[in-house]
Image (cartoon, rainbow, N blue to C red; front, side, top):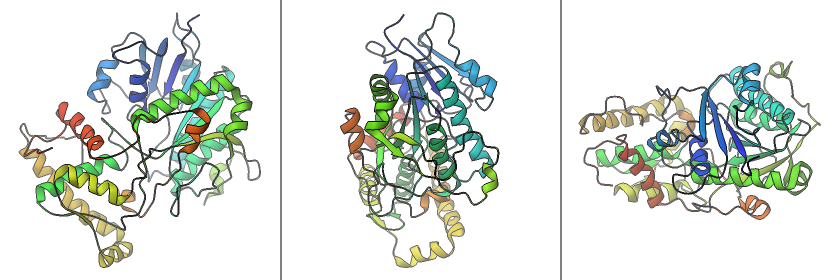
Length: 417
């Protein structure tokens, strides 16, 4: 039997799975695991999602197996937990599944987030997996101060409700060695999701237009962040911790009560296996994951402005009031300006970029007055995790841009960075 664990990574190919794999199977140095299997809905040959140049090299590692599969099928879930011949049973499962799209209908969020997570948790419990680590996101209202794990937060929208419900349902599975990591705004090389990469594109747009880049709302609105290297590092550290202490001790040391959050349409819960009614709140080991920057709109905007050598400021009362009254039209107006400029930059690139993977269009929810504010002491104190990338600044943002440029995904036109 191998002394190193065998790992199953479920979902998250466009986000955390690639960076987690890079940690487990480093280009230089000994692997941390005996084998890794990644399972997601995407094809990688040909690629049906952006993979990033570094992952296309990692996938060649003989210790790694990628499997394209529909995890919404219970029969498929059973099969992907069966290790290939010559592999040990999976000892760590990293669940990165779930629909991160903001405006999906409730039924889709229920099935592709909560119901899926529960199905994976059931199989992990049945297989007696040593650690089942669930990655979730900060889809909660955190307006006044950085939130602790013990705080009873209100989920934002239907997406937030179903991601929250997924934690509750997992917490109700007996004998599941569960730990949950709740991440702040994710950023890092080869990442297209979240709030940070679109704002880099926005910075390049305003450099091209030779205009001041302005944000809505106020400078003190928190947008706390975490680097993808720390997503990977923390998931691994928590899995090792869970294996060492076991379920009961993990709940004692890090357990938090996960309260019920009502839906506008209660019928969506009818027949939902694993749903726990109000008053039956599970206790789940929960860890916030956030860097030490305590980033705000002002600090983020200044870092991006410094990167591109542009001026930065905020819209005044009149514009902020107007967007509150006519949000959708204002969002379209803003996006029209950004998309036109970005298209011009990409077409003038050498060579021209006809279908760039980076877009200037910003979904409306990214422009809402929503804070992302979390305290990150618990994972440091309980697990002993030490951040690899504690600060978001101009240099870390430049690394993101440089990674896109190196693979030809950043416009080669009057590039000054």
